[in-house]
Image (tube, rainbow, N blue to C red; front, side, top):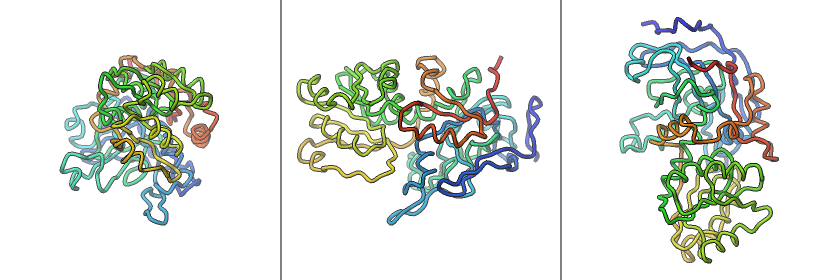
Length: 375
């Protein structure tokens, strides 16, 4: 059966897309526009965020391309881009009814495309799917293209078409950070420290603010980002390039240390920093993807403090809450979404994310330009 298409949008035969040929070999070229089969949707890409993991994949990090003890996970001949929203312009048989959507609706897709058959999927942990297909990395093309296909196995969420695309696409990093916050089991009496005031760190601060702990402390070395951290809900901002963060946090907690530490920098030094500033029985939440291996004194975790060390991956069950937070205008999105680029300037977008001066916060690509807000 042919796909149902929007009368308001003429779909071309080909599209411009970024294609991965290997580390530091991404090219823009023409690709056929996918045709949705039964249960599938075709989106016109409104915006796709550029994640730090996109940059690490681009530069050949072992997590993606393998190494001595790890097989490659990322695939060549794949369109990258996993943080995206798009408008439905075509649908295969049954897709609209199954998802409760209509042509012209805007949706966000979760990054993971679960197999729904492995041990983890069967036990409810779909975000840790053993197959681990993910838009833009493995199994399915992502959204650094004018159009993106949504397979039947994907998870989708409606997002307001009145939002700028880059704001709507921020639901991906925000949902991820909110999952990290849930893993932290924050209590009202807690001192919560978030390391890093980039997209994930700011999102973790915003999520922690919803839990209303005693205090939230942001750590970064860029003054502008620390001010933005306050706007997102931090009570205290510490520039660790100018102050001893461990000493400052112990001072404000009667010498004990923080209850919760959420690591959102991806820098090895932030791990030992967290172990040192936590109190005994504290909770360490690791979200970042690291380019380099990390070495720490594990006796701090065990013999010294008996810490709970928890990982967090993706944003399961947090998407509706993240979308609600953005749609309600709770966050300073204009300050968070600092840079938008056309598709042809994807390399500039990657380079901006990698700029160590901290001149950007959230970088996005708008493959079809800026779309007018819905009436």
